[in-house]
Amino acid sequence: MRVLSIGNSFSQDATWYLHRIAEAGGREIETWNLYIGGCSLYRHAKNLRGALKEYSLEIDGQATAETVSINETVEKGGWDAVTLQQASHYSGLPETYEPFLTELARYLREKLPGTKLWIHETWSYDPDSVHDGFPVYSMSGEKMYNMLSSAYREAAERIGAGFLPVGDGIEELRKTGLFMPRTGKYAVNRDGFHLSIPYGRMFAAYIWAECLLDLDVRGNSFRPAFGRGECDPEAVAILQETAHRTAKSRI
Image (cartoon, rainbow, N blue to C red; front, side):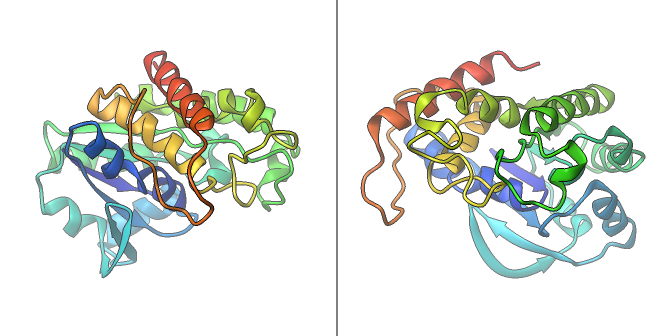
């Protein structure tokens, strides 16, 4: 499977370990992430109209030396899935999605007939986040999640796309003891908004593997090297079970 993400650092988080998790599950997947930090749907649409080569290309979670446009990457063809998402700070504001999302979807369907589009539901910020977009949500992770969950679901329905419920899963993960904000042993976020390494990134990739590949990640053997020793088996089991449950209950 070949997956193209027109995204930002949040799609970078989600695709970092995906090919390795798929490989451990007996599947093959190649991910291309078009990366601009904090990139919004508005900017993606602007870049598309101008065929602007402003994206750093990442393949299977690794940076390349290439700078590319949406247009030339789409024209390469062979894509089985394309993912779209809003910039995190706008994720709960449905008025920021259009007409840009519909414009992108229309272009992709014209150029890639038969390719499935997916909406990547990003996640709310950590309760202690100091991100400058957090005041829009009254510095409340719960409020941000409720708003982004609604906006993303409406967006997926509007363009007839599949749904990658990472934001839903992160919310569930934060209710478990090991990953509870402030009191848990492990953090879901590394800076208040990006996903932690390795657990947050593993979790997002598990959901993508479940949805895109229909791969049951429970018991998946991949463990990343991350400089702090072995992964905690209990933590990994919670990540896998929560991801599996979340993916199976998606819209």
